[in-house]
Image 1 (cartoon, protein in one colour):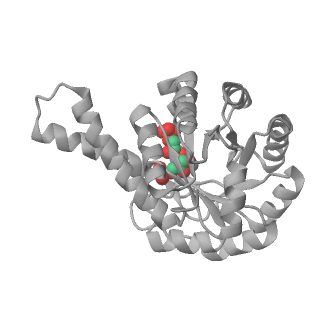
Image 2: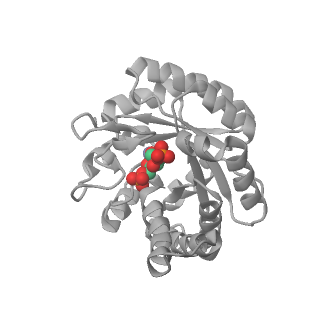
Length: 284
Ligand code: G3H
Ligand code: 13P
Ligand code: ZN
């Protein structure tokens, strides 16, 4: 079927109390792995591309691959820009065919984040493209920029209420103790803060940096209002792990298909596991 906006998937998730996985896609094998996992689990799915992924693969390649995947399947698939920090990049993605964008103004002062988020919404909403915003600073590395534990700033519930009221945003990424990339220790989520935010904003909430968060904590967060769960690092680990396994066993292998095929299989497995944890299996 044609690409669907993320909001449509999140409305169902919010209503039925599950989480939709948003998996970062960087190349053809990962796009195929995400679709295959979704089909095997009969799960709705979000494929997302960061600015780094777009620079690596090319915007038209990313859009083409994900559109082809969606159109070849009965599974609802959304194509989402992950952490768009540049208005022009957001416009380019929409023109290219993305069904959803994240405008990440979390590093801006509050009123500037509100103004820019509104500008993106004014452009995207009339043409049926959904928008995710971010409030608070998530730790870790994105687009090669690192936010240390100290710099990370948890989302303030009252500020979240004000932000949603001022922008009319339909989904919001928050900072409650997760970080992008691999964790040093075990992350501790501020679930009380999540519950407070959800009681004030009533819209689907997005969890970033979800690889490495224990399954039980993710499930708890979904019960409290998380509807979109972002996963990148776990796919990278599985995919590169699959490549390594082949190359360790056969260091002279030169056929990329024999290296990338098993990597794709490993990615399918981890994505399926995540879908089961998020409760999205059987929800397509
Ligand atoms: O938010 C971070 C994602 O894992 C994307 O990472 O900017 O290296 O593609 P990336
Ligand atoms: P992880 O790489 O920590 O899973 O985070 C992914 C993410 O939040 C993408 O926006
Ligand atoms: Zn993120």
